[in-house]
Length: 418
Image (cartoon, rainbow, N blue to C red; front, side, top):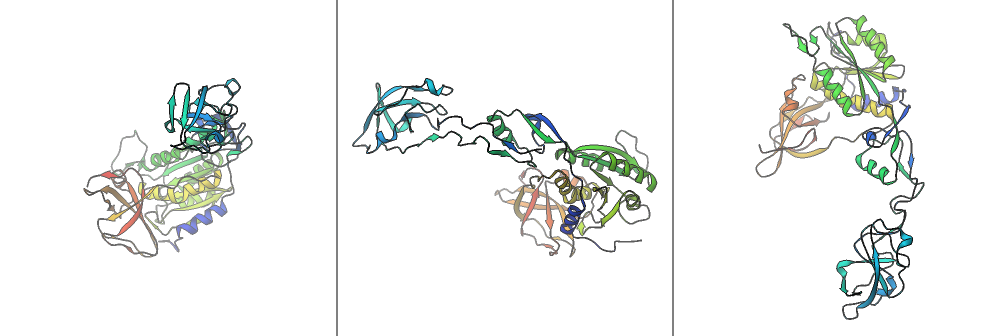
């Protein structure tokens, strides 16, 4: 058979994929708080305490009774006696009691002394020996962080399925939580195919190439917190390929096969995959990556990705990432986007979503410019190392004209200069 009978739009493929994946990662493990960064929260986490644990000052200044300042002005300053000082870390019960006509010097974060109900900023008073003069009125609870204002005891802090961020670590640490239950890492088995592909460290013979796609995919998986399982290389033998895929289905939560995914005589992966599972989608309306597809076995996805690195990257972002989210019950941050002006016209076939590697830079006037690097050649890795973004042309457009303002996915920082 030559060619694909039909090509599936990528949105449809993602929906179909989600409906067919029934496998889930549910096992949890307890890790230290720092080790939890980037992992998926395995349970709802509730605050064990009120935070802050007491009313505290939000500024440096003087704790006082707000009602004492009512009517204060530059022509009618209110004089208050300073009876002590409240420092950060002080025990609230050891602090002096503030009565009418009195104030206590206080530091940011220090407990509010008994009797006081507000804090005036230090720059808003005139200090005198043993007294302060106040010319501004202060409302009750002004500049006071109330007990439990950040988190109340029993309030939910993290939800199951959230990807742990640095600020989550900070919040949990502030509540005294030092360990966290997270989902175990998703296991992904990877297999490269093709007689011409050799592992790193081998000596190249004429007609051979190093396997660059599998290492790239393993690195991508690691960046998403997955645990890659290397199934090695397989020759162009459907029986051997099928055996390795079946092993991957047993050991991992999903399988990725790169290379041999098209419909040529030597592209045997679809035949092998059909022995290990049921092919659901084969052929996507995208460029590069048209031969990409997936099968299902025991509720787990088996992905057929291109052996060409750039096409494999596109397929990974389009299909594998949503599958990881589905299996883990989480959602990853979308890639950052930036708008800029195209340096030249770029075309795309109708009905096909095209992913164009681009170089994003600022010209001498500081304007963001988008330079398409190459449209064809899904094995040209230099377009990723020399570029820093992807321009996605939707199916209903046949391209963009030079000077058009477009939005691109940012893969690395914007270059300065032309």
